[in-house]
Image (cartoon, rainbow, N blue to C red; front, top):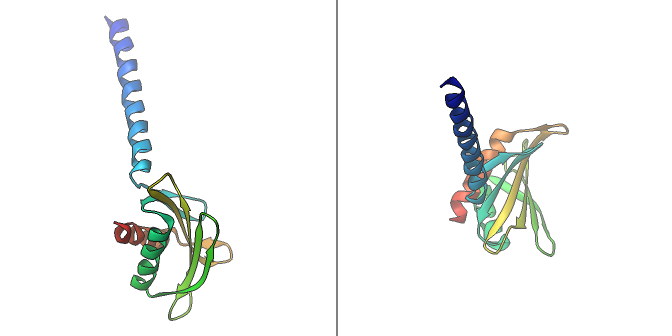
Length: 132
C-alpha cells in the first residue's frame, strides 16, 4: 500500500507543479510584470503608438519631463527625468509583441550602477492602467 500511495503522490505533485508553471506562463500573456536586471518588463495591450501615448500620460502622472524620444522601425524609446531635477532617470522601451500588444521595459536609474525597480514597477503599472 505504501508503494501505491507513493506512486500516486508523485504524479499529483508533478501535475501541481506543471499547473503552476502554466499559470505563470499564462500571466505573461495577460500582462504580468517581471523583474529584469535593471528594471521591469510587461506585455501591455495596444500597439506601440498607443502604449507610447500611455507612457506620456504616466510621465505626466509622475511629474516626469520627457528628455528624449527615439522612434525606430517597430519600436520607441522614451527617456524622462523628474521635472524638479534629480533622480531617477526613467527609460521606457516599447516593442511590438504580436498583433495587438507591446512589450514594455521600464528602467529607473538613480546612479551609474543603481536602478530603482520599485519605482520602475510603479511607472509600468501606470502605463498598463492608461493603456486600457
